[in-house]
Length: 79
Image (cartoon, rainbow, N blue to C red; front, side):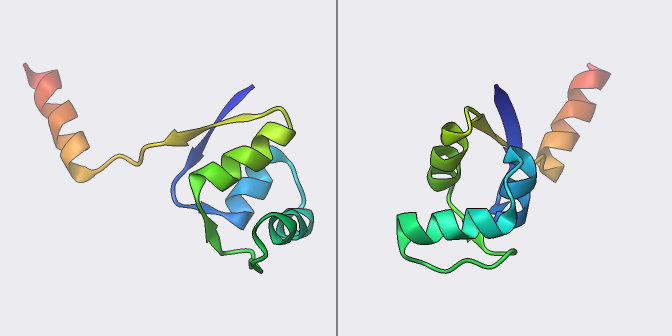
């Protein structure tokens, strides 16, 4: 199914989102990218999505709400 994940994506947030142990995830990333990752390391959305697909999960990037977004919403509610 589809699951939202907030950007930036860390190893911890990805492992919690897709239900994979962080240690297993870092091993998998080492094989794919030949880079070592820590629990707080960030990874790009495409790499995260590729790993999630293997678990039959479609990741959707959740846009973080900015102060401008909140102001526009308040303004729209007033109109």
